[in-house]
Amino acid sequence: MTGKCTQNATPSFAAIIVAAGKGLRAAARQAGDTPPKQYQKINGISIISQSINPFISCDNINNIVVVISPDDQDLFQQEGFDDNRITLAHGGKTRQESVFLGLKKLNEINSLYDFVLIQDAARPFLAEGLLSRIMATVEKYGSALPVVPLADTLKQLSHDGIVEATPDRGRLFAAQTPQAFAFKDILEAHRKAALDPSLSFTDDASIAEWAGMSVHTVEGDPRNFKITTPDDFARAETYIAKGKKMETRIGQGFDVHRFAAGDHVILGGVKIPHDMALSGHSDADVLLHAITDALYGSIADGDIGAHFPPSDPKWKGADSTVFLDDAVTRVRNRGGEIVFLDATILCETPKIGPHRDTIRTRIAEITGLPTGRIAVKATTTEQLGFTGRREGIAAMALATIRLPSEN
Image (cartoon, rainbow, N blue to C red; front, side):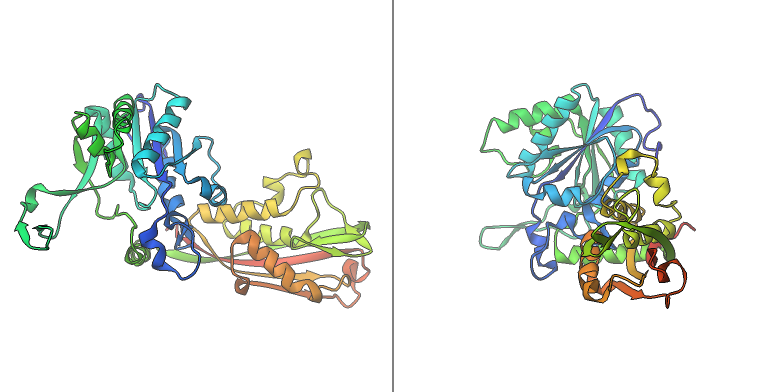
């Protein structure tokens, strides 16, 4: 939706993505040690990536501050965002504190922004239409709060569980994010609220109301729900399955490197002792090169030479895991999921069998796939050809992925 977020590109917009929470209510989704909910995946893509991407796709948003927990620095870096508009800030103990820290970071970057959108990282289904409505409303009124009507009758209870009242449902709405405000106004409101530790607000519209700002509403979107409980994950997966047609693609890769003087080869990111080395501009990891090109091929996005040209001295001696990591990120940024990797090494020496499982484990670490989705085989060429003459090693690979259909 690049360039379609608002009709008037004159005002300056920025966004804050609040991603510092631990998501304890969603922790029961999986057994064992799981990352915070925003880093868990739905249909192969993390919730935080799906939440940030609509803002990346909007050219009218000049800066995106992502507020994360200091403990999640590595998790965020693994998402592989490549957009110079993204800036990280560390959050606090509460959502209110985290938003304030994000606003202060944004103020350090540029204090002259006109408007800011504040989004929860646990809302992965922000549609272009809703984002456009919010931006148009805040531009007109100085605030914008997306709301949706309530479907259930509400009851007000006493402390002992007795119904005291039935509020008029027709005047009650559920608030969503992103909530948008004039940047200077909401920053000042947060500053004032931070001076009183007894105050606690669950959203930014509440702070704006408390500070005396008028909060204008805009029609929300029921699909823009927040993932909070394990049941929400199931709801999100069902929503994606119904709303997105996936197609299966297979890409192939092939690479060759000749032998040169040395005492080891690197295959699949694993250093294997040998009486020769492989020659190449990078570390000459012929196996990772083949797998990388297979992934590039699966999304029709060139090859290693196009993304990492050998003419560039930057890549001389480079670790080939960088290439594979880039290909994996490109697949996932397209909404794709890597289903299976199947590779074959062609050589007379060294013997691959003793190292096969170590290689599979290393590829699993790089790609984030379970080892059960990675096959590594080896074969000789019966002393025929350049591999048979022990002049080098070749590798070929197939990558099976699932990608949102373009039709």
